[in-house]
Length: 131
Image (cartoon, rainbow, N blue to C red; front, top):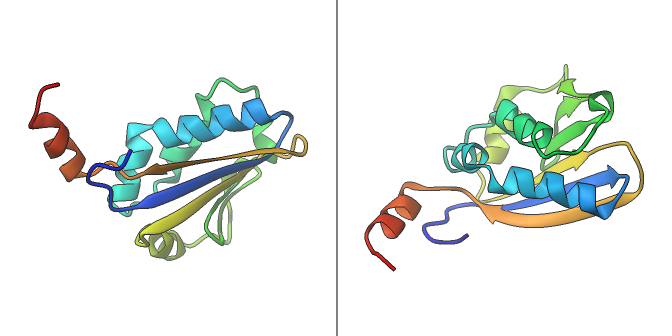
């Protein structure tokens, strides 16, 4: 990651039964083109992040899952936090550095990975040459 990057994203998954399951979920979020383009667009698209968690290949109890964008609690017990305001998510997504935190409620394991948004410049840079 990095070519044409406009946002630096830290993804932390906590409360897992193992470090491996936390890494699988974190990498699933970090590698998702739809999540990466949402970050570039400053779009707090919770569905894209939750979908990436869902297809990570980890058996989860969705009712235990919470999701935060920096200090903003966006998903609670697997669904939208009733106190979440879209404007708060938008504020976070407009920053150049963002932390996504997922809590699984399954144990004490954790993992952190880093990624960036997927920008127009990334596509241009990688379409303009042949290796």
